[in-house]
Length: 461
Image (cartoon, rainbow, N blue to C red; front, side, top):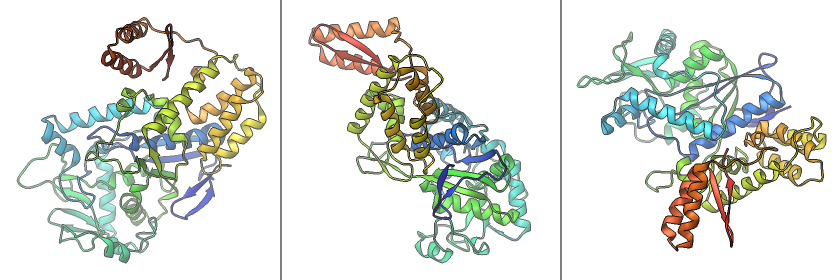
């Protein structure tokens, strides 16, 4: 049985579904105003492993909901400043909706590259405005809201258990709050449910409401859409640890205040990915994308393998040295399994049991990977190995199922690039050779140079 750490109870608990045989799982999706960096992708990979575990090992039918925030997320979590998408629109001259759809498309392309399975449902905030307004109405009727000059706010002082997810009382949150920009707020922790459109300008994304023309606050969308898609309570809510103190705290407050029932049974949060020990940021120029990795010869699958090397609740540190190590390890995996015979249907029970024991222990992916390497290097028939490999890969999602016992087919255009790179090396044109090497890497191939020639290796699926 799968056991997971529950952020709210601060204990590792067995996953027992509210409805036998079924799991409702909600994960906070992207705010689609820019491309996701590799740190963002860590949470989605680990949530994908959780979903695969629930389906492939536990045998549950999983409804996996991921929202798309395409309105309402302001540049400050304190409910002030511009909408991130409207701001990007002003800077680029593109329409807000055009920007949202562009980066939504890129986001799902990136998820596909790292083999994150498609969610069951991907509701957009802009397409669920009526549901959000209905929820705010309920909160208003029950006396949890008040009006300021810029919007409708939730009064956190009226929700006695506010702060329980983060472990901070309301008083502690007030004391630790930064200077309140909106002096009309009754409490520093109060948050916007509906924001009014500025009187001196017309927003691209705004709607009529009982309180005036405007747009929903960032937090309300998740409460409204999760209830519509999964009911309340539902089984598992996922996200990054950065969501705990504000976004998820606010979801709990507004959902439970409105409907008088528990919101979520189990909270699962993924820790930060650091870069050389520092937080990712544009100012440090270290917010890398999958394309940045590809230009350095790191394939999406090698990056997924790298992420699996740390347990989801621990901080993970990205370095180029570690990424190259993951690439070499993934290349070795691919070389090895291509030489195996087709699966026999038997498998190796001890290996599969050890893998399940590891993954069911709070998604211990490092231990699960050690089981995979025992299989790779073990003294078993390649047919049995292949069968157990397919069992393991359905959970880890490393694309090995597409590689076992299949020969490498090199496209003509890849061979042509490699020939030009080999000639550039012979001519001592190292800049051209390096550029062509990066071009190969961007197409998922690696060139191994020898004394009298070269070999090509596929490094991504």
